[in-house]
Image: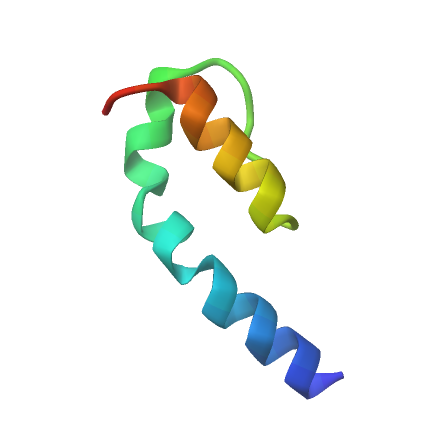
Length: 47
């Protein structure tokens, strides 16, 4: 369990660093999936 949590944190750190820019939209980010986060970033567009 701890290993999975650590891997999830490691994978999501770059997206968390961008979180301040996500305030441009009314939709919420889905933090539990790298694929969904990538799609969300593409939807938000140029920052």
